Length: 231
Image (cartoon, rainbow, N blue to C red; front, side, top):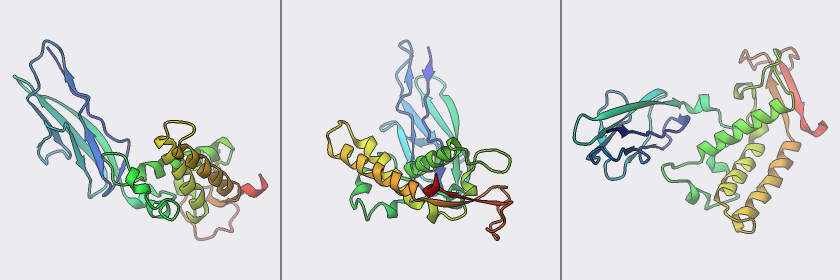
């Protein structure tokens, strides 16, 4: 007899952003009694919440830090408990290169397609941020130690903003598309072209020594200008 709790958490979440703590893939072995109670504790010590009917809990965190999330499942005996850690970061530390408000002039209804359990596309903006940094790494734009540039190295977010917002729109519609000839696929191709144009016109100033001091962007020992128009 066995209880197999499964707690699905996002990889990272921003303060005050909705997230889903999901236990719907939990199950018991065939020789175990039926589940009678499913509870989730979103923050250690705050108490469990009964989620038996939906088997998930939508939540948001008001402070940054690592949130310890616990799942407790009860059948006819002692409950089984598992826990996971959800990193919660501030908007400042997240340092996303674009946000939802910048998508609306291009797609006024885009927020209607936010996936269940969320109320923003911050996760997609974060995916765009990650892809941009990986693109810089792939093309050998590194810091003074030869290490990949981080988001903290981007001095002026305006310089990556168009690149990020069009990539985010592309990723959103790629996720919605289920055929090569549907409207979402057409939109994804349109925003892919705009993303590439924004990237190829980008001029980025980056902090190459990682000291976080951006007061003198003329110091060539600390800063590098990446001009994609010349690449």
